[in-house]
Length: 514
Image (cartoon, rainbow, N blue to C red; front, side, top):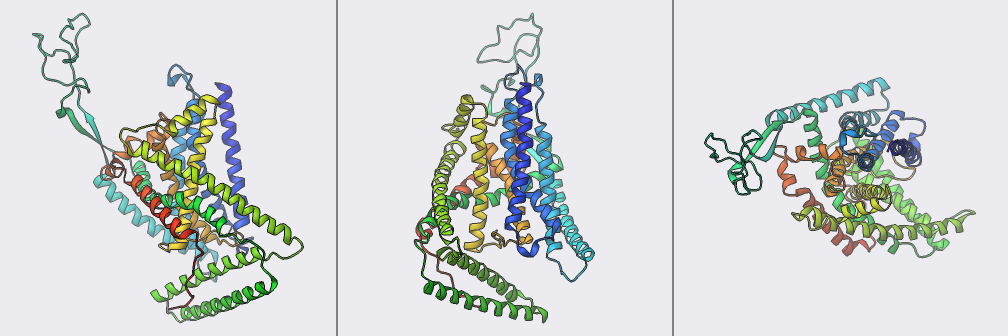
């Protein structure tokens, strides 16, 4: 068992280093050229935020592996766990909350501040905005915590008297399991068995939770709302977008005259966007920054994004240079790889939806389904079930990210900063990292409940268990599976939309300012 603990500790160290290396690679390849050799603090925040979000998901299988390290012990206290998971979970949640509420907003305000001001003035202005926001949130959370920061547990009140071991226990039967309480041997009407207790024995046990736990609960609720929408849309759009991307793929290289024609049209559109941007700059200098001006700015950003997408699509169908043939071959292989991952993702999405229905929505669950699969895989080979469990949890986080991008870009319900290769500004990085951090906590809570049988007796279940689901005013959201139903509804609507319109080439509206 000691060797297993050492191996688990080494795996945690190696995975952490791999996550940090991957996030540094992601930042280097996706950052905008304007941010090279500058904006170092936002870059550190991006790497730290992405690492916390990814490691928090990977901590779920680590928690299970940590529990399995002691499964051969006669009793739990006989084993010294490899990792102090409860302390690690609280550390991750505190870092998550600090990043979401303080560090990322400060970075955004500082990064998007007036570049003509000194760094000290920009930092002071960002600190003021963050402090004002934190004070408002602190007052609201403090008032709500003082009013309803309590936990209501539904319990049964059971009681029985004590008798010497030499006493006569003939009166104790299956119909009357309680010990007699009177000296004459008769028993008063008491309830000591949950199976035969009267309905009157049901009561509510109320206690006040701690403020950190309440903040985690509120953050989980906010994240669960985003998770239900983004995750539901993403679990359908993630595989279907890859499959329909293959269907809409370019079939062949275009001729040079067609390329010149398309490039000329792109040039005209670029000039229109430039003229519109200059006109908006003149309005800004004149102080006309009203609602109409902000709406036109968003239109310019959207049209610029469409222009960049069309430019990349044109480069795909007309590769240039000495390695044009190689570039086209890689493009074809890329679409084939997308089709393969799309088909695999579609199967995983279907399995996720089925598991939610048969295990989470049906009471009692009709089958353990994926829980049973993970347990069987663990019995086959050590950490095989844990690896499969980690795959399903990470896939759910990818679905959330995919849903966020799909909603932001296609439906324009909220402003989302798109991630673009060699074209992502630090402000876009920071906004996406903030959303991922908020949703990651909800993904953890959702997975701990979806795989409750496999993850039983873990530290995460102690945190996201009865306390979170019994908070006053919040417990009904979990009692009636509101988030699960919202998740499935969003998944169904996204599937219908993609099957109806996803295979078509999108017709974009003509660019025109109001």
